[in-house]
Length: 250
Ligand code: SF4
Image 1 (cartoon, rainbow, N blue to C red):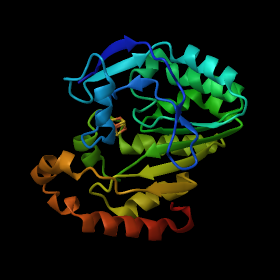
Image 2: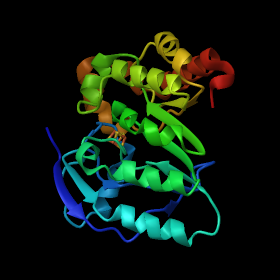
Image 3: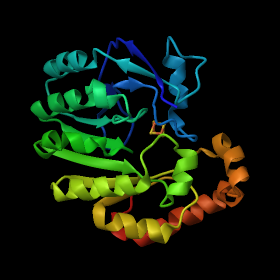
């Protein structure tokens, strides 16, 4: 299903972050067309004026003026900083293809010499390698919480396939861009296979169990994945991954 789009105005672009190593976050969209079943960002719906009753994943509000707002904010800053796109939406969700807000924000950050960090599930990021290559300091991360595309199809039905994400990481590395992967939450997976797929294409991995179980219990039981709902599964899988990735794991 394609998410319904609404254009909105935003009063701010840079939001101070509590994520370690990240000064600010920028979210060009409220809502996310990828609609992952376990999404941790669903709480953002309460900030919507139009979609408080809509299902997460079925609406996206486009912050139409965010580029102008960001330009004004950057001009007022005395020091260069660091920004992550994005924390509560995917900056390369389907709406970005036409709206290009992420691209225009990146161009501004690059021009002001800011450190850029990206976290996405979409190879659409490859469209912007011209900007990323010329940024002072830039890292691109892909969320890849399983090696199994059958799991992805059920839990992330509108997000790009796992092999397409791995291929995008490979291409980014070939362009000389620093890459990383975010493995979270601990979905059903073969950790060794995930390691073999990711190790050649990332410099580091962040592994986090996240708290998502209550959102997906029904889906998991229906698929026979009940074993993956336990804390023990999350702990063991995380440990296995940490061991496999060694110094690359954070
Ligand atoms: S891509 Fe991220 S923000 Fe979007 S629905 Fe999935 S988990 Fe949520």
